Length: 198
Image (spheres, rainbow, N blue to C red):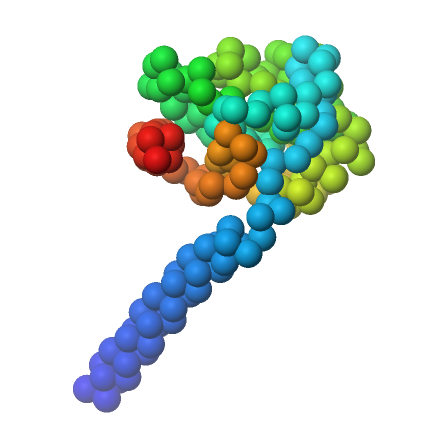
């Protein structure tokens, strides 16, 4: 019985710790948005048609932004498929939203490579790449992590580890929120529509 009571206490403490952690995470996110207006979409990159694009080119539209790479085996294709489903379900409102795929693998992801990869999911998605320095600066602006990982079985002997959230920015380029990897298209769509109606 003592062990059972101890287990109950430990489970109770674990539950309190989880609730506290979730609350802290939400509180931190809100503080970042309220106290850090500098977290804005900010980039100058080359799109998959060879044109230089900046965040200002998409002013007036909501932006769905995802960082990834064309040789990604699962996370990136899955997320882009979800984005494509969202764009399709938006109907006429799709014109108000610009999905962007920003490569974290400039060594392989040339505009030509992205031109083969990105439109296969949805014609409205724009693939963006740049120099290693441009990608580094952009990732720092968006606060995303990425690293090159040696892996003999992957193309060119390496793969990329990276953050996998899908960002939402408002028509003024301000950060609204993000969805974790695996969020269903239906949930993203509902959240996006709710934001667009505010």
